[in-house]
Length: 377
Image (cartoon, rainbow, N blue to C red; front, side, top):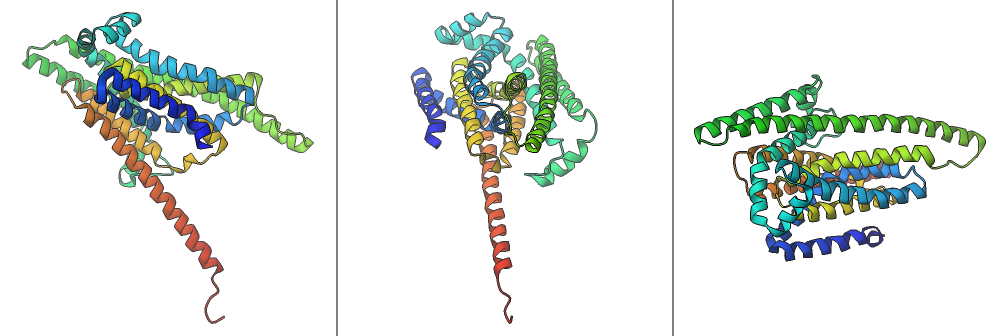
């Protein structure tokens, strides 16, 4: 079952890692491996959501999502989007950006380094908003309760995450301007940081708005589906899976949702490397696993037991946001950047495993207490 579901993902992983070694040696191998882990972990909740929607669609639309959908996800968001970001920031054509990355790495690195403050400000603000909206939301399940409970209470204040994000952006831009003034650096970059950060904030709101629009459409379709189920139960007819217009709306919703989820992986990748070839390899492999996880969840429905993994992924996003903003001014090792996210995600996974074991043990002891005959009876 596992090999059948994840077979293509395993094959693409092997090809991607081998290609990384040929492209840039073992350092490139490590970067691609880290990107794979981050993309899979950051998109885990996406796979859970995908599975919940996909199981309501008929076989035809499931195949459409898993074929055409993966082309959009892998080639559109994970391969083309990083190139577009670099091209816009470095003021290059997309083809020229790819050509430079492959043929003149030194010149490409110079251009990307010059464009890095804009990329880091845009990406840092986008990721920071994802993190802030997550930690300010009151949830039934809390991983770090001592931190998440007070933050959830603060989250009741309207627009708090936006205010904090803008304050962080202003501090970042002012710090950059002060540093540029003291060291005779390019003071105009501070303005670039400010504008790029605002653009990242606006992008987050647009993506959130689109997701909200399709969520409303989805709720409408689910209400109709519920009515059809009740009608089918009363008449004794079999419940039909969604097809036609309803399934098409769900397909669009899934693609928008996947694009919005992939933003954090793509933007976070810039905190680890500026090389679009390594990004394409790592994120492309990760996207394959997201699709495999979706299929697995549709068939098995077991992976959502790891309840803290979503928390770990969002804390990793928060760490990447801070790192991106810091790298506007200071250089941070790729090893540190990559390992922080992996450590947070691994810790949340282990906490989930321990929670499941504790719950299983508690259920087992409760069951034994019920069946135990009291002494003296």
